[in-house]
Image (cartoon, rainbow, N blue to C red):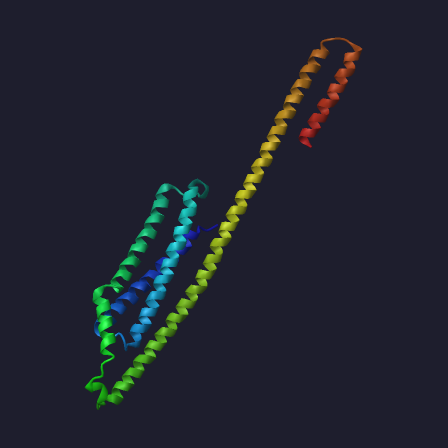
Length: 246
């Protein structure tokens, strides 16, 4: 049975470089373009936020598995060093995501976004007068839009695949938990049966030893009546032995 921790960790490690790349592009667009009118900035912001939420979900799932293991590490055969390593990975992931979100909300970026929003509401001469290069600009803009649309479709495909993996992984984690509970219940039942069997064996063993002692005493005495008792005790002894090995 695979440890769900490593499956979830692998998904998180695969997703994080994508978050870094989106964040780098997001910063560039804030610094070099009008964020209000730039479609690529809007798309990048949406994809970055989705990826961050997915990464945070992975970290939460990892934290849940660590909490379960911490209650009984011997049961899951996880030592303290491995447990601390897992906690460190989750803590480091939270810090990295927090740093990204803090940068996105920093004054330097939010002030620029606010400024772009205000400027977009003010008409300019250039917006009224059509440029002689308008056709070229429109062609370039259309080409840029096509590129953005293609990238958007690729990212949507990737996110859809990731959502499918998340659903499958979540189901796997639930099934693993249910199997663990069932195995634990079965072990408890088996231990109870073994304890009851050992008690019955001990009781029967005591009865056999007592019967043997009585037979030994009676054998030392010559008496027809006592011989009958011996025979009866022998029968009882045989019955007890049959009962044990039945």
